[in-house]
Image 1: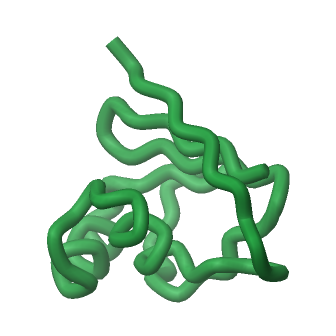
Image 2: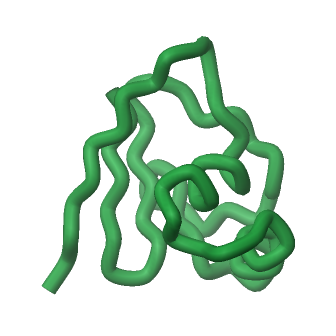
Length: 71
C-alpha cells in the first residue's frame, strides 16, 4: 500500500536529499545520499541518482512505498 505525502514548498526548490530528511523518510543526510545513489528514488517517473537535484513545485518523488507530491 502506497502512502502519499503532500509537501508544500516554501522556496523555489529543495534539494532531493534534504527533502527526504525533512520528511523523516531517512534519519540522516548521509543515509539519504546513499539511498539516492543506489537508485532507490524516482523523480517524475525516472530513477534519480543526483543527490542535490533541485526539486520544484509540481514534481513527484517515489521513495519505497511513499509518493511525495510537491506543491
